[in-house]
Length: 57
Figure 1 (cartoon, rainbow, N blue to C red):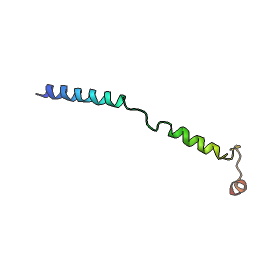
Figure 2: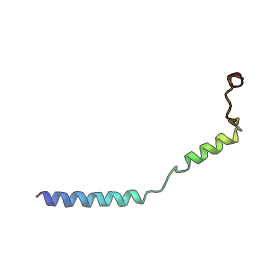
Figure 3: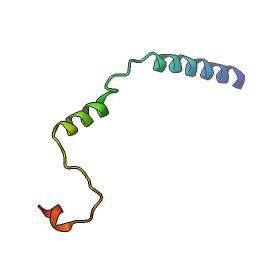
Figure 4: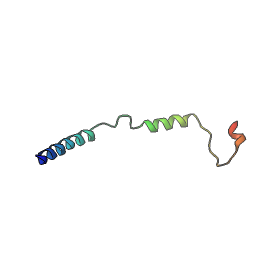
């Protein structure tokens, strides 16, 4: 009896794996789009210095 359940579970997992593999990558470029938007705003460059007064301004 346990063998049939194991086989049924394995079959279902195979079907799920195939379905997941066929899903389109919707929204996969969100990170790239966010980075482009960020860079378009011309953020200040980090120059590797420690300047508290400059950070305040």
